[in-house]
Image (cartoon, rainbow, N blue to C red; front, side, top):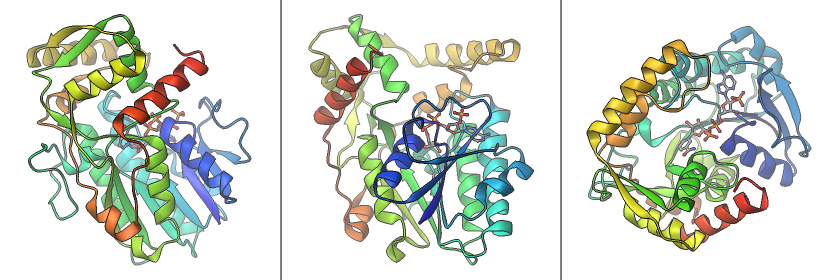
Length: 326
Ligand SMILES: NC(=O)c1ccc[n+]([C@@H]2O[C@H](COP(=O)([O-])OP(=O)(O)OC[C@H]3O[C@@H](n4cnc5c(N)ncnc54)[C@H](OP(=O)(O)O)[C@@H]3O)[C@@H](O)[C@H]2O)c1
């Protein structure tokens, strides 16, 4: 199948593109003029230049594609207007281009987020039956993206995926935590007892591949993640074990996140560089937790995570070492 992957220059999109190409699909990657395509250079994929915020640029990008895996997005640290432009309006643009140019589209898979569903806890992890209560600008923009896709389900089959917090080779987020832990500093947000669902990107990819062309996934929403939700303490214990070191705990009180968020946003107004932290990221950090239940994906798709936390983090850490990032 000829599959368009948006966000293919990014962490998750590049893994999806790689696996699709490996399985013999014809892969078309949406990249921007400014995208760093290092992860795509050695892959047998076609790159087409466009931008989600420029509707006209997308017509030629989607031409001839039979399925779409829409992974491109702007994250919690981005400026609010960029998140809305890429995630909300950008998805509307991509969907409109597909409606115009791909009358026989076989499936549109939207990579959404736990933030579109809202914060949860280990006592009540998110599941497909819950009403979404999106968190922050990021969460609202990702929920709007879901709704733009769902609005077209009479024209083509759609599948919404809400992956939990994803780590793995090429990921820049957990990379910074590994770097800090190697300096023997262990940041602990709040009490460290909040729970999160973290999983390896290869498990995300195998879940998405199980949905592609699968009628059981048409018109459905799935959570993908690990079978267990973990506390921050457990995550960082496991990261320290992967490194083989110890670190001094550095508790970060909620107020520090709030102040950091305000300061980050203030800096972002005056600077042209890529934002690293802002009020929206602070909201995600201060939420009750990010947990989910993957039972539906397991039952309907036969999805099973292949990495547990320890093996996934070890694999990721080893990749950073091999790639010379650490
Ligand atoms: N990472 C996680 O823990 C996680 C968890 C749940 C859900 N997700 C979702 O997974 C998807 C991928 O996340 P990621 O971690 O791979 O993020 P990432 O590494 O930051 O990649 C984002 C991708 O989106 C592209 N993009 C952003 N704005 C664009 C625009 N206006 N037009 C075209 N492309 C644009 C970027 O292109 P450039 O290279 O040009 O910037 C990049 O390829 C997102 O939808 C995110 O919401 C991520």
